[in-house]
Image (cartoon, rainbow over all chains, first blue to last red; front, side):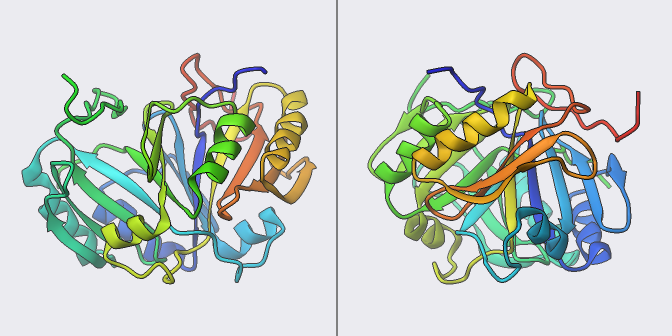
Length: 147
Length: 147
């Protein structure tokens, strides 16, 4: 069987109000769009693209119903230092995010909390001391306890 | 304001049955786990990590209800040639995936269809001639019509 590239090219989040969503991502995360128009905003990430797109247009593109909600999922943004977790979570909440879980230490180590974006997409803001972050933001899985 | 790295470290998909999910990702996409145990499987992707994790455990970690479903979203896997789109979609359907949209040409060009994984996470399988794919799978946004 042919090997398929282990690759995610785009994460597309359905949104209801583009200005509200941009406030969260541009002012909360301090990210800069690479392209935007009236219904979609693209952000160039670490080797993939984040798109925030009208949920109705996304549903139409998928030929599914906007009411057919997907399974639970979460995106994680990892920071380099534990002290960055809570300030970023506060900034996201100040920009329309909703606190899901206050930051604390998970069993596997590190420090993390969860904030939902204005369209209920869950973001984990995490300090994970075991997974290296390259200069370009790329993250490499490392098993807990590995050296 | 401090610039935040434009980075997604992990995409975590909530799943109900780990064997059923692995059949889709390991046999359908032909991806190799980098780590697995009884409740979670990690795949190293292009500069980020894909996790498939018990939906109940994910909900507990987020301190939200498993019934509180997130907004609509979709992940995209981009292939290098248009001829790869339909065979991969067929393979995913043979491994527990559900066809959402048959492959056709979107208005912005290229060729794509959608298949939901066994837990209703939507995957777009796309050939996008405009967005380059590096050897490591990294994808770079390029505006339609740009040269």
